[in-house]
Length: 169
Image (cartoon, rainbow, N blue to C red; front, side, top):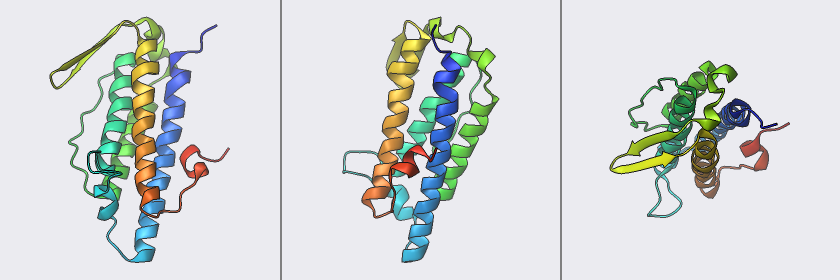
């Protein structure tokens, strides 16, 4: 028997976003302790041709908010992508969590069979079914951007470890 799409995604995504809020809290405490403006983190990137922390979090939250919204046939909120502080990024994550908490397992019944089409700027994307969309688009992109956010902060000296990323059991 196939595991329901909701169970494969929403609870895990919420947990990872909650972990990300905790990671950003840890980053703010580090900046406060070292007496520098945490905006340095928000604007930091791993390498010049990669997006900064702010954009990593914006894209990561977009992936799950829009993706799960499409699968559940729910109108998803749009955000401005104008976050400039760790607190504003945390607020964005909290809004995303609140949206995801409104999604119920019944909303995603049969979404594994649903064809998905959307555009990002001039690029059109098409998935023959929702399961493919979840497993090949939403989750890989989400984890890439969340992991990159973690790595940016770790590279900048925030004392983070595996348990910060995965959460304790």
